[in-house]
Image (cartoon, rainbow, N blue to C red; front, side):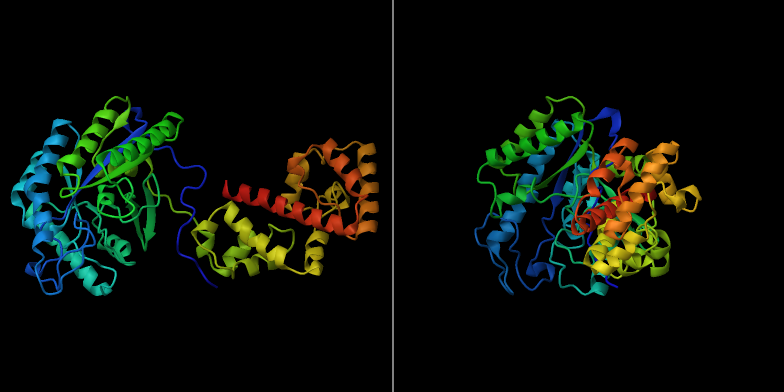
Length: 471
């Protein structure tokens, strides 16, 4: 038995209604990453200088050396860029969420004081602005603990949100296991918050962005001018705002860095975008923690029994009768590579159908022959399965006239005599009259054609039955 842990399904075709406060059509959330003083630097005990997200083309780490130009670019973010952004957002009366690297916060007390005075949320951006992908799990766990400790010491309260950025495959699980975070943002996989299960803990995830992000001024392909950045933000906003007007409000995250968009030529685009969205009604510009608090109340976690996590006995108990009297299909489906995408009607249907389709013709015939005649003797004797009884009743086959019953009986007999299995049709797609028409048409087909059609109908019946279970 194999299980695929990645979640490709998410909310599927019907995401929940965000129900943002005051009928907002969109939540536009600005994040300011504060990393200056927490980046790779030999002064910080690191082996090499920083090489990530700067205006130096083709930057590379300098092993064992200080990189004076790189350091000065980060220093610009603290000395000038931060204050330019501070003036912009406080002047626009828009609160932001700071992703604060703990060591950077400790080395920039005046900026922290300004963040707090503006009532900005200061979430954790880890202990240091370094790569975590090769960090041993115990070391990363210790780093998370130290980040919380130092953040609390510097800011005066522990962080409620977390974003590592340069994370490992263990990061989200380790942060959730820490137990004190309202939300984690180390994902980019949705336009709405959602919940994950980490052991007994229900952990909220508020996805972040790497595309509506000024980091693309420093990466390829990226922004060349501020207008590139503005146009992309505007287009993203327009699409999401229209979705909100159509009844599906979403969230738009915007990622910023003091040393990047804090430069005058880049900041002009951000200022233009802020002025643009101020021309719209029903736009909510919260801190990230406010999104978390809202989602917790409006869409609290709800655990379900997940097919992908069921043991074999439970899986077969629930789904062994989906294909009429053929539990072997569910037994084999349980051995497939199931995952979160299968924790829904369509997912289980896919797994069951894969087994059915890959089986021999003889096995398929066994499934077909397990189906009852339409309005036949089993129905009259009330010996159908509960599913078949309900299905036949939905098309009025439990209320036939004597003439109709005689006609069905004759057709059933002739069909089985010719094809070797009963006439099968997904009655929920039909009326009594259209079933009779299909019966009279299909009886003339070749047995090969009818085997193929009957198998399609069996799969359609299974689809309806699973939709009932997951409703």
